[in-house]
Image (cartoon, rainbow, N blue to C red; front, side, top):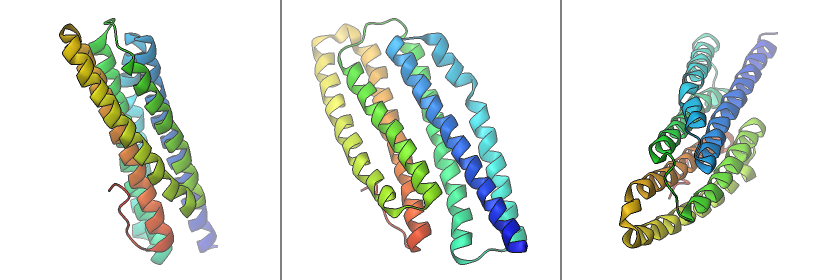
Length: 218
């Protein structure tokens, strides 16, 4: 009975992490819709709802710490709880990056943006796919999906580098657009960082399953 109760609590935590991940992904999606439409009201809505993700992180962490203290789990069960604490921190940071994107959208306002905006939106769709994949890997404790995250992250890194090079060239030809293009470059950087946080979660999943630390962000 005690073991069944512990398993139920672990499942509740997983469900909460899924919910938190969905909230962060929604924030990223809405911030990029705001960019695509250059909608400052939509951007402000992302900023206003950030506190909900922070609150969810606190609730999950409190529950995980309580389980560690009260149940004194060992081996894989302990790793599950530790990885949950780390994963929620990364998800919270992804929510923060969505807010940063939204703030950049507000700074851009109605300024005309170059073709590179579409490159940024294309990268964003990959980051959204990563968020779906990593939560599946977390829920299923799936090593193959966790390693796939690393391969996708390499793609995001390459696209980020290409986008920045294009933006720098555009700036030299259109110095009057430096302010808005700089904000677009920031957004590209925020997406690259979000992908890194997803990869951190994947590293945790690998540690959970194999009991060994790996560095996928090389």
